[in-house]
Amino acid sequence: MNYKDLLGLVAIGEDSSCQFKTNVHNVNSLASEMAAFANSEGGIIFIGVADDGSIPGLSREDVNRINQIISNAASQLVRSPLAVHTENVAMEDGSIVIVLTIQKGIDKPYFDKNGVIWLKVGADKRRVNSKEAMSFIQRNLHKVQAGRGVNAPGIPEIPLLVFEELLVNALVHRDYLISAPIRLFVFDNRIEIVSPGHLPNNLTVEKIRVGNSNIRNPILVSHVAKGLLPYRGLGSGIKRALEAWPKIDFTDDREGCLFTATVDRPEIKSSVKTEEEVLTILSKRPETTISELAETFGLTTRAVEKQIARLREDGLLRRVGPKKGGHWEVLGRKG
Image (cartoon, rainbow, N blue to C red; front, side):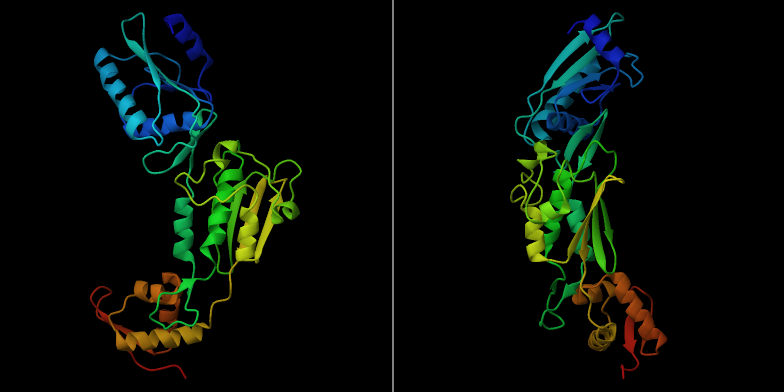
């Protein structure tokens, strides 16, 4: 690429295949940009060009430093490693612009060092990560004892496979042309996963319930299992989720351009019974914390705090000493 070619490309501005950077100092940030281009259609990063299209350029010292950053990012901080091409183009004032070319990847999807997939959306990039959402759901699911003792670890109120399938489905089939995140809402009686974009083409809720599907993002469909959640085949995730937990409703909002999966939660056991068990545990282990009680009963800390508050209001429980280092004193029992 010569000076005149570079000026012509810069004059067009940034888009999904072209990006400007005045300088580069953060190797992790560059790695995510490179992964985003490789996961899309490839592209060029002009280093030494400002966002407004002006060209301050780089010194020779900057060029040496940045080329080392590029090498490290491509070979060590992107999975799978990328083969990229760099070219130094001299400006009239003696400065240099690095033209970094990233080809469309052949081993998609590519991840940064944290296991996050990035995709280009126009001149920006979008983060794709369902591990965090899965962790959030697990933290907020109730645990049920299922006939086990009070001190035995409980099992999730809803099989985790249900959310694995629904989250991967949301990740793979969402509309990435819409600048909006996948949203997750946890309510007392339900959990909602809301994806940007309605069902594509002639697909309907009735069809996806029986296993029909339509590939919206082929980049992710064939290789999404490479480091993310389990993906067990096109069109079968919704069926598996329904087999594991039939109480799931789907809403295809074509006007609002949203698709929502609503998972109904089971009713938790009587709070009165749980409060009795809380008193039993605290009478035996007064130093037990609210977090430990929440883990024991498979409840959120907020739910346990409410029960503790009711027991204190009823005069059955009081706190002795500070929050940290104190203990509970049971003053009475239910009934």
